[in-house]
Image (cartoon, rainbow, N blue to C red):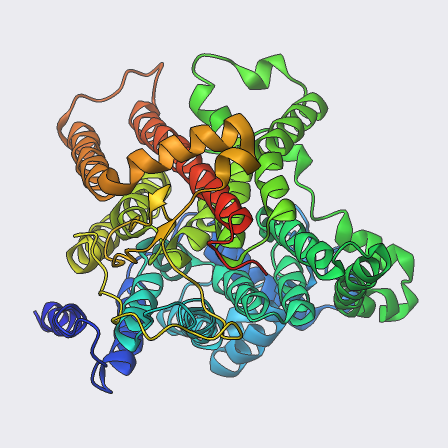
Length: 578
């Protein structure tokens, strides 16, 4: 009851203010409420709880703390008598190992037995679980919360009609997205490090600090290799920015690229240098790290994930038809083809908003078509979509957050997180599910040419219209130069955007209701229906996978439409380019 009361107070405060400045307590209240939700979810079971011999991701994280505390650094990624790589051997980049060492120091101070070498496997005492959960919440306080604030200030603080109410609402939506909370604080992982560093990097790049942004994103890659899902978008956007800064001068453009390349190389070198220097390991020490990062032995996909390969496997037996090398080649080709148009759009016409849409398109391409995808990998495309919550309100306030959770239901059910799943999703929908955002402030007087601002919603040809709901109407007329600049594709996109403009919010409401109905039907069938036949033991899980897959296909297509519309508007001079 108190939780519902607090949520109601925050919602009322944000919804009723219009373009007024919210009271001072609202933003701190949002941050405290976000932490409270994380604490409540952490009281639920974790992955592999009480399930020997391998337990689950919770045990993997604990084991890495044990390993990094009690063995020489040169042996962290090497098979030894006390480091059996078959039992949760380290298979993430160096920053994850250093994170495990830092958290391990805390665990040893709280309960030494929880990280004792070889004798602590499966350690699940109440004190140790509380201490482990505290490390994830501390990671959110260090990364997720401040990174979200930095991004919202950088991206939405410069839009025309920006106000504190809209920025606070966006902060609340990003921080209360249910999927990251369920995975990190329920299932148990530290995605908040890599996702937080990525958000920091986006904030830096939006502000024009490209070298700092490159360093921060490279650090995210050095924490989890899954951050590679966003790497092509960073590459394409920064390359487009360098080319535009060059202004046709190849030497100047090359200098800009060299600066960013040097920043990336130095950051990677800093992370790998300890393994090169440890016990004189040299290149072999670096190779031992790198060879653990490619999971080719695991096959095309694992468990039940809502991507193309798993969703179509009942019809096409990919694992029987393709050897692992051939499956890796085919998935690489499909992923490259799916993301290439998005990269081209940002190289040709880079913009801050286009950068985020490119991140969504590229990461969704990886999730749908790449090799060895996990259910939790969907957090990567979910991040840029939530960051675009004031650009695509209908998508970010209901459809995508709910779809992500529905697609992960087989994993969450296995972990015993059903109550947390229902609670987080229902709370999020109750707070944001109506698909409306606070209105913009009244347009200020015409700005001088030197003033920098992000003009907001993508305009349709002719009159500029609000897309995504809740954004206000600019009401200005502008000729669309798309037909001349974009040819046939540009004309098709103009027609699509024209249709989306006045009906998009209604379409997302209908899509959200349809998704909710299908999800409820799947849950009811699983709970009340007959037991699947022995030949199809995972039939219920497959139903959720298919729902997720087709939903993600629709989101993928929509993100491409919005991305190309951004590129069109940059070419027509209606959207700020970097």
